[in-house]
Image: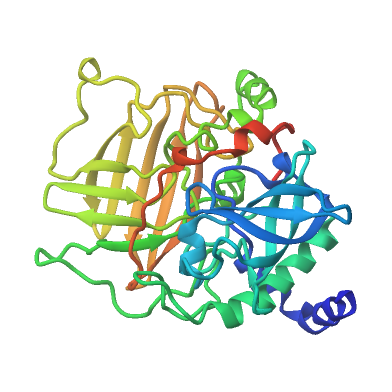
Length: 141
Length: 260
């Protein structure tokens, strides 16, 4: 996967200037004040609960480790407004779905992370923080 | 640090925006993603629409605003932000968790959250309805009246706004602000002496240019001007956004301001 990613970076590098317009929108708080870019997270688990709420949608995942211990992760997504404008529906992720979520963990060490990419039960990959629609794009960097 | 982030942007864009955004939500944007500057799709083209009285018609849903993260990014050419020592000290002491906007309070003027907003323009009033943040509105009197007398108003988040026409430009003069909102996430401050003069010009169907002069001798040694161009979102509709319903962020925020 990592190699694939690098491949994409190479191919798309020239288009970066245009793609910056699609930066995730952080409407009301700073990314770096809450999350740590040096703490990437990638977990697979079962969706315990979905909250279609503002200022952020949230999905809570039961993540089982090798010993069978379950940890509940709280993944922050874009607001429902952003997600729905980007093509999400209420059926994109449902409680009980097995999904893989990638993002960045909170600085304070809690099981909280801001989502970047979701691999759905059917293997489709969707951005979890896409600006989408008309409303994406507050610079976060 | 940036490498990680850039990679995500690229992946999200490659996997997401191109393929995923093909299914517009009901009431959502369906204009193709374009190369418009800043937020969202490119603007539609065509002449400036006009009302029956010949004035430019600003009605509709718009996207755009000065950076909510750093107002200095919207400075017009040659403009500078020169803070008083007291304002500088106030800003240095601010922390992101205390940003009123992050706490679901209004963004004030001229700050705008990166969400659509709608102008409702009537004969006597012009309203700016914000989807976020917060789900609120500004009221601008365009019936020729003067400002509400000082004794009859109290310091407020959006101030007391009157609009007059300068040709095809609507000039919105606002006073009577409180000192509580921040101009951006960096914490650029102001006092209750704040006076803003906004010039709204619909250049064509798709573009609304907004130039704002910020005058506040309590916090800035001289006035400064910012500008942005809002884009018309012909097919979008505002959605509900109740910020306080599930705002978990502030309890996890700890870093100094100045971070993006």
